[in-house]
Length: 121
Image: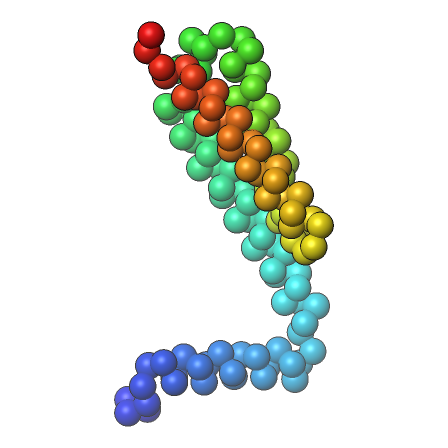
């Protein structure tokens, strides 16, 4: 076994796992596990974003004008909803186009607002 290259050994392990899934008809379980992992990944991203906001951004953003706060938090909230749509539905065709357009608009609005609050005049 030590004479088999690590890459080939990894492929053999993946082939064995795939064979077990097909033989035991576990596609439904695999789909369920995939959905649970997607949700867990989305929650992990949300937790990291919340932690960063709590530690760094909240104090600074509280000094901004009310309009800038609404635009920034609105862009972030819409971006989170957009990511949630991606994780639940997936992307294909027109959904992919709308996802990327909404994500780009949210990032642009948040960055523009942040940048306008950091200009010293």
